[in-house]
Image (cartoon, rainbow, N blue to C red; front, top):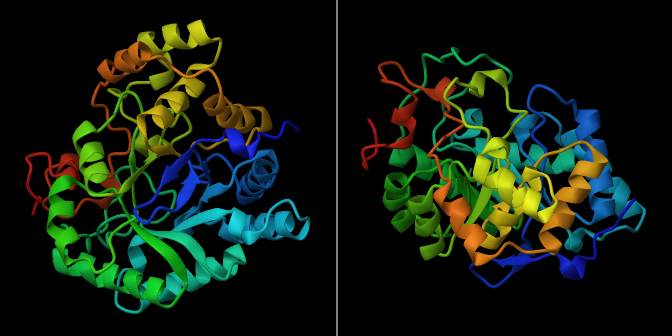
Length: 336
């Protein structure tokens, strides 16, 4: 197996000066890959040079990933402090007392004494069963509430105070929601996990996060070709087939997926691509260490933005909502 030199991997800086890798390994297996395959990819990925692993309770594979983390540390491949491990509290664990319970389960499953970063996965307690279809709705779902969100966030802050997590973060937020909650935070979010890829660049939200010292972490960085059927619509754009990207990728002699990752890292976000295939996850990491894109190529990709959101979140809609757009505050204010 090819091992990528740690000194060649770019770094990103959190608000307190801590540096983390500029690219991580995602572990959302969609509906296609089981926990064993993903755990094996994590094991191989750490051997290859990955140090940031993005996990979540709802992915239902943290116990197997924990076996891989334990194994690489037992083998002396890495020490705990070499790794940056994230997890997330799922929507059904937002209530008072539940966030700590969720975090402690993730810690047990991952066989860790602390998490480096703990995200609020979605900003509302609207639950859906893993693997449900896109038409599923929970009658108990409701719009975003600042009060409810801050109840969840206060519990995350206590996890930092108790030493169970080093940093906390938000995910799937909008500028109106951030403007409502950031002034109320005792501990600011270190990172914002958000959908980011060439056909959906979210320039306003990206700039807002950066201006507030919040590191953007990009999911679906290559357009999520393995995402579940419930998240697919006829209007979706395939990033790896965008003519602009295909042309630049050919010029560099790489797959368009690698081009997406080069762009993401040079732009300043932390992409978290997912692959269980060794040649792919190695090339994903290696490509960001060599042959950078030119400013002109970066500009071409910037202009290739199609504003095409792939993860629309419609399964979280509440009774009376007009459509998935209501989740994303499209008119500039929090949708009630």
